Length: 417
Image 1 (spheres, rainbow, N blue to C red):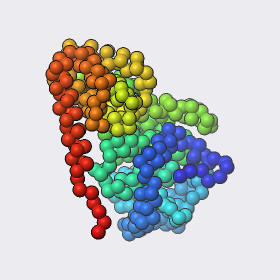
Image 2: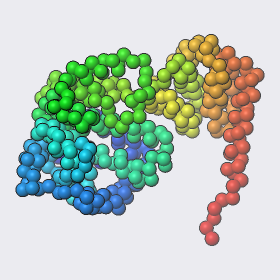
Image 3: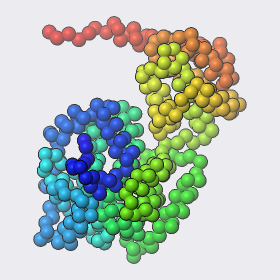
Image 4: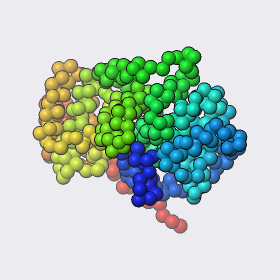
């Protein structure tokens, strides 16, 4: 999956957002998706291209000299030399998409008729460059993952979340390719964002970058929000600011890499965040308490971590990242104590739910070790839950896991006839 083809790294590859590249490869490797992806690409991509050929108009130099002139300018700017076909699709929506091909057959960029009609040359160069970025960075593979598995409903929740986080970074990576293609013309890129979002042109709206940046400042002042976490693309103020950062160091690709961390911070404005004191403090207590309980016996097992991650997914954008931040027992206990201070005085039934969640981390292996029980008692004390009540709850959950294990063991094994 290397996206470089020679010793010299092309401009388009230099521009890619580093953490996005790493995350995509980590997802494919961790969830062992490569065999399914290869199978899907070999079996289905020809069908996808046939659908485009059957429903869209393939453009040529003679048929559309304007677009092909722009395409060649973009290819030269990005140092992109792969075979590529350009199509137009009759559609009232202003949109574009790309299809990554294999076996050296041409890649595909599709522009809708409305996009071509509404955008000027500089805006079109950004869009074409953006889509070529998706192709070069193999971003289409994320869509193939969904199709190969049989849709998002068949995915593990953690894989869905990881792909969602990665997807927004992928758009920021492709924006960088578009930025180069559009000669770093941030005003034209901003107007392209306007048109993609609203369908309106300059006769209806005055494009003003400062308006976007003011919106961004207001978003950064919010104390947590769940409004944007479901969006597949970064919100426009984030995209504009991410490109403004690199415009300030134009001509120095290495400086772009140094700004990757700042871009990641911007992208986190759209992360899932706990809203309200109950959710925030409950999240922190379960995070820290789950780590301590999981590590109480013979170390924090993969099974225990999996249970904790599943519990935290509704409250934390990337539970694994947050778990990794807590490196010492003292750090975990400090977080538990600070969150318990609010929960003890203000939460009601939620305190019993928290104990039950921690009990599930301890009991997932069907055994409750003395040190695990000791930590659960400690957690109950911090929350002001009587240990007599909490202990009954803990052992009911342990019995549930034991019963599940016993049932699994007595199921008749499948044998070949």
